[in-house]
Image (cartoon, rainbow, N blue to C red):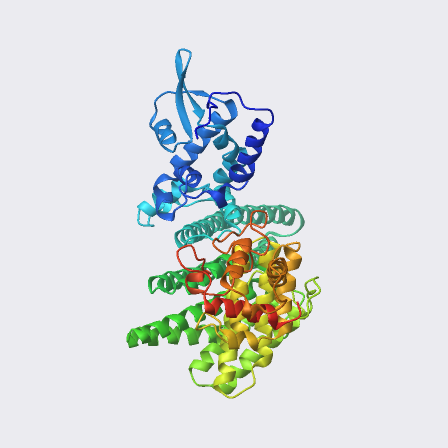
Length: 624
């Protein structure tokens, strides 16, 4: 039966409002989650060019396109001039060219685009672009060799401020580090020139002053005594004065030389660590290279009155990088290179000890002191362990752990009532030890203890505390994607299944309810009751009750019940936005952690016997 209503008939009362509400709730307010097949994302990507390989060539154009679109968005229409950029903007599908009066103009294609790609979105995309993109691209094009393109002065400070808390690429880190290094070199050259000019000026002033004193002494002496005594007096006075002036100049010159030597030593140390970071990168040790570059950057935050600590940190990092490279070269059977790197690793540890760069006891109220000492002790222990000096290695690792543990205890615990107390997140309390550094230290110590038949439970518990603190940090920052992955990894760590990357029924059955409830409490508290194992269980229990099925008999549920639950929590997708995700959507179950992600089931059968049994055991395991 064909309706007699025409598409041109006017809308009935209320239909306009209903349509607007439908569009806002299902398209505008939730467009990233509902954009299937992708349409709005295609338009967004045409402007923002998010992929790494496209940024280098098109970042400046992206900025121009965004600014042009901003004019169109704000003014409603802009007179078209048929430029290349206007053509690119039209090809994105975001704007359309229409003739209005005598001139063609650009307009936003429709009201939905106008609402989705609004001023907030424009400002967000503009802020994400590098403030130093033009110089950066030219520097990369020069093979990273043209030092005239490096940042200086205010431009460098602005770039460093922009780069804070951003996960920069290797090339970005290299560009900023090279700019900073060049700035230090130019500062040394300028200070050297200024010191030479200052010495020349002081020499002239001293000579002039000495001559004035001698002249005055000579004039007074001629009035008082005989010529012979006058000459002797002048000679004596001249000698005395010359000695005093010369002595002061010697002190100044020595101080200038000392300052110059210190600056030169600092830049040589930074240069060496930068070179090793590049060598790590070249040998595909990417996380190690990132850590080394991070230490170069962190060294600039240490004040000059703590120069000894800065030198200790850099030298320890140089030793660590050499150890990592030596191990890699051994794998490649490059024995001479491996030996060369190991010798330098040993020499750098020796330097730290010979220079006595640490205080006798670290001040636990000064983050730089205790964090750098933990870093040094870990690197020293790693070296000793590889050389077979096990007792000394155990001593170094234990000293590092004691310092870290005491410093950690001085910070307040997380203010959430969990069965397992969660400490502060260490990387937030100091800038020296990164998340990976804290984790790697614990893992190395656990492995060393296990290899030598020692109990490692205290260290394992400490690492779990670090993981829980990191999970809390992710959730507090509304970083639900990393929180979900960290949740999976914590479960695998507790079950000792990190290598396999998945869990089965026996592992869930052996889980501590205290650990599971601690994880659940974090999810529930941070999501305002929207996420968590207990929330997922409540949704399933409600479906069971509505179907009139026996309560708690999860193993007996038919597939259709599981399918309904699956759709309720929407495990066919991954949505890491609390406002857009369905109730109970997170945490996703730990099916897989390969490639740093969990998996969804868009292209496969979600309800399998294994998954049903896993969830049955999880929901029935503890008193939620």
